[in-house]
Length: 355
Image: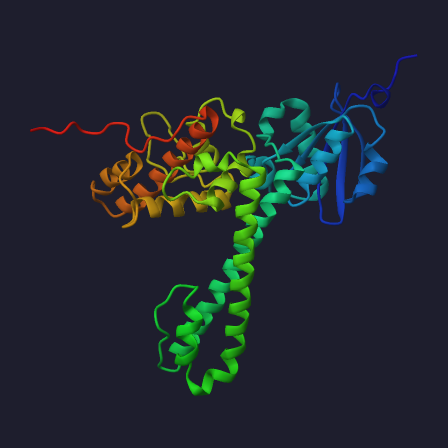
């Protein structure tokens, strides 16, 4: 008697993850026939009940909040897991018939036909994800402080006043005496919150320094580049996890969304903006580092010279393009330093002095 598709494990599964309930569609891999559809609780226990003791399956799911831990758990049970980037897949992301059941079946059929169509991505490991959470928590605290400072400035302006210009660290000492009397009772408590957020951010900064020094010594190599500090270097290492993921350093810029998109047709090849795909947090940090490199405190180096050349071309967005180009080249440089282990040489081609 021939074994069924379930007994041999020849099923392809589409898993549309929801916050509490997830929709599942199982196809017979050989025929493409829908064998089963059901819902499962989006929890370790719920998934274990359905998938822990089954033969190896090919399971496709969309990237999302729950996809990191779900993909790791399913892989530990011996299944082939494909995490689909739905924004690269118009069949799912822009479908006019979008529902949990339809998405689950679409994922299963695409995984059965050609996994490459899902543009699968690889989630970072649990350790890297946990350490990266420290950096993201710091970012959330910084954003809260910035919004509160902006609120205070706007509130004072509405009364005809203006708070002194100051950085975030010096804001409290300069803003407190400048608050209008009518607003002091309303805004003074926010100054206390801003002070507490400042302490929290400083605590995160110490945690980042300790984490980089003790567990990720390779970040010291990346910090040779002026403008790259503990935050950017640690985010770079944690996001990429290992340099061997990329055969060529030049592909790192595109991976982080810093390369222009393309949409050529025939002889038409219009210039496109950068894709802004990949990790937004790291991309933002690289752009901030590029601003420093091109700024008044940046040291002379190949990156700075290249950016200045681009900025001198003129045009409406010349400076902006120069910053993005330097951020892209910085990503390539950091990967090369990490992968090769060679020391950083700021100026590779120094002009020969003439008498």
